[in-house]
Image 1 (cartoon, one colour):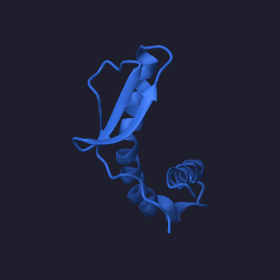
Image 2 (cartoon, helix red, strand yellow):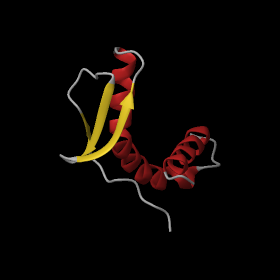
Image 3 (spheres, one colour):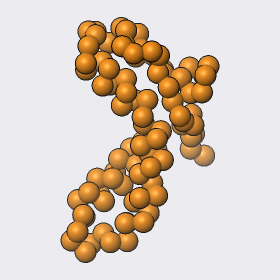
Image 4 (cartoon, one colour):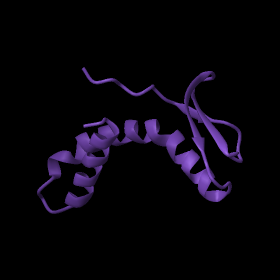
Length: 93
């Protein structure tokens, strides 16, 4: 049986990110700490992307189920394949 990720939404500590960014599920469930070597825009962008991960996965799955049958018809084939690969990667498949 595969282990599921901690359900979203995930939240972050207050911006701007310090060298120790913290991500939470709900109010108190600690998901991750991210140590950045340097602070700034890149650290903020990484923190925001990780926080959005459960929402991105949840949004992508039904979209791919809806448009997946069009694979092989020449329209959006590369995008469908890339999206399926990203979903599989997020699920550890």
